[in-house]
Image 1 (spheres, helix red, strand yellow):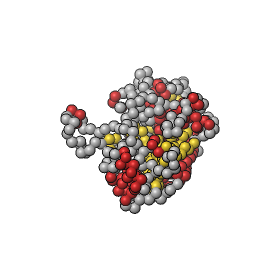
Image 2 (cartoon, one colour):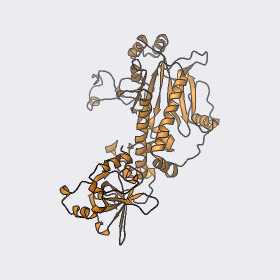
Image 3 (cartoon, one colour):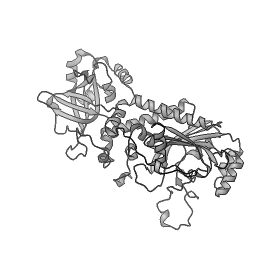
Image 4 (cartoon, helix red, strand yellow):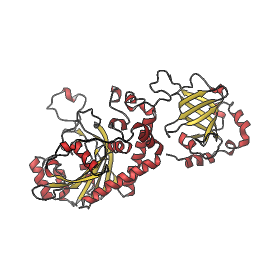
Length: 470
């Protein structure tokens, strides 16, 4: 994304006549020329214009109208193009007003950036021409000017909700968080791997898989060969494929869509979500894994807060003000060998002062086959770790991987998976090294840093109610 400096460097490369304060007469005359004969104006994003510290010559700004206020002597517009939470104020002659110039309409404005007399903004755009590119019927448009629509309301319009302030802010935050996560791994020497979306592996072993079938396969005999000759599913994790790559690259990561077929419409469940996953070779310490989790979280969050301060503030102040999380975990005893429930996770975080908490060394029988056996006696555990955060519960999960061939062979045999994972055993036969990794749910991360209660409010497209967007 071009910053304000980049935009102004582009402006300075434009013909000097555009910026000359003495060229007002030529500018007014040029506006009467046919469009193809006019001097091209420098095109600015709203964010670039708002970042200007001085007046400039003729520019062009495109976007959507957020407010219209027509007075006897002046017409005020606020336009936004999605690059910023703040809109750019446009000042125009009332003669430029038209019935198509309404809230939600798409416009193209040409004019000059001038110093604004108002303390809340550095510049405003003095319009010389306003062209309505796409009209909008403000009466039937579901979003209304000067109304703060709750997330529950805009969720009804998945095809329009990105035009609301809250969802616009959320999408900018998602974009910056994505870039920050990639930058963290690239800066620390990780190789980005595109892991398959269609796979025959069930990494988690929970059986909550979406099976892939051709459109006519369900209508034909179940005995017919599968499209890939084996059952295929939408991936629940890229971990096993990353482990393949970790045999040739010491640090790898992936960041892509994953799917869980849990039949739930709760505020915590998504059928499709994004996962950040990493694998580190040549490590025998669970502390190495937790340190990368912590560094990733801190680095990405710091970048998001510094690059999107107004967007984050919108959520913290208006959309999801901080709330204390109640828990009744004291009444639900967790015996050894039982998995932690969400109430237990909340209690642990609360007990530690409402800060992120690492929980390590889970019972052996609770975890998947690939986690390393700690060999620690009757209360057998594996070298696993979860990062619990306030209000959410588990944010990251990881482990050391079982690199010892005899241990892995024994466990796969007991589970009846030896044939299906023969390729996985091969990884331990040819140059295996101690290694480990983790995964972080991207939407849960956004939920936590923004304080959003319903995870469906941090995705671009909710899966209801419009069938066309399912």
